[in-house]
Image (cartoon, rainbow, N blue to C red):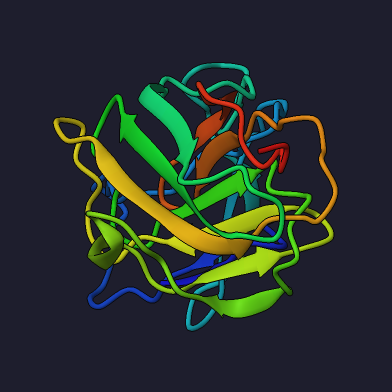
Length: 204
């Protein structure tokens, strides 16, 4: 079928005649919205050799489908941050250790905030370091916003602490330590949560 996210429409073409005496069941898989939203009641119509006017489905549950509470059943069971040095102007490897409560699919986007106060320029090709660097594509680092966004190359296991990070140049001015947050989006959603560990104070 042809799915259009903006209009919330699905168009499918039948591969054989549909009988008036038969009920047909088909489905599609979607990812629920990350933000809260009310339920909707879909409608169905047909065009082509035989036209059928649009009519609302009888929804189950009665209020409709695709409601979202804005919360996620997934969480981080491990979320740690560390660094190799607090010395001003020094090369600093900032590392993160994360483990989700359920496996996260390949191509999940991991967003980390709280990476301000560095001399490292923004880039869309930030090299990922660490024990499990191979689990991620090169990241997008935003110096002004202090964010790193990386996409997973493979499943992130719920039974393994994934360790990865990036190299930055510490500020030449001391700064209050930052507590980063980590979230996941894309195929699956894990809400942003603060990690354990304060970094990038440059007060060493």
